[in-house]
Length: 422
Image (cartoon, rainbow, N blue to C red):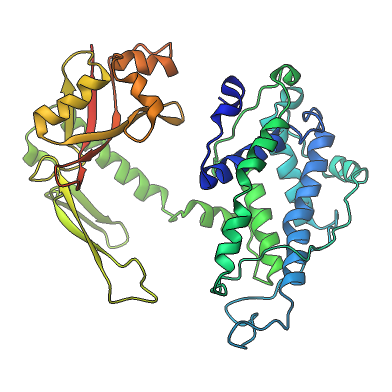
């Protein structure tokens, strides 16, 4: 989108431009920050070594420089008092197994993202040690102007000054956009995003997380954990015996068979079991939880004004509520976007103020009353709008995510919406 629409894709609002600036910074880093695309494993190792220095040394040195050990807070009490821990920067040592594990995992993951030389994992520690000897790391000099968020309330008037400083982020975003290389310079670049998989011990995912977590723990003198403990924490795994798992799986399959046979609802059962006792008990399942109309109370400022509460009415459609099994099915043919909006008004007396459809990994806005660009979709068929984002789409339905309001401007919650057009 950035290269197809040019600078017009950049938003004008300060907050949105700040987010765009961060995105563009990430894009620049992926493209080598003007130094050329990543092509070799040596470059991946150099990147990993610099990231090690940034994460576990430079940032800690800056924090210690800005907030020294004897620093006092606004009330005069020591800033570094429990639960805060005074950190220590880590000096890189290629002979330290945790240091080297971080480098090996980070470099392999980056090489996999960039599909370097068809990507074949490198696991020889001596190869990495040899590559690390060629990496030069710049000396870090702490900045006197660095802003550290200490979590304390800022002096009166300082927030305003910070807002003025942030006013330049729009220009920063546009300047970052101007530094992006042309599409023609990418060559045959094919980047592959990685999906986290904790159960594959050969993909370097858990190696990276375990090493990163232990190094950060070492910064703050926190007890480190082994690989298995890190895996359990990352996956929030509850250990289970294979026999119990097999038993539960068998009973789940039994319930699925009942479902396929369209059996009587009374035939379905919940199961409670404990093989240590042993105990096995089948009970009638409870009804699924129901979303119903309610009044939600919130405290906008619980610290300074805990007594003040705001109330918001939440309405449901249907009015008597719905469960996760309910659906709103719109089967009126291939409506236009305007006809889709009108359907909500005529059928249920509510207004659809915006809706989007998840296509791939992104939610694509079909209509939003606050986005003028989406008004061009109003006369278009819903399927045609979908095909703008996915020309190969051959299905007969999709699932719009709708924002609904009633006549009193209350939020209306709905079950899953299914739009059929064939």
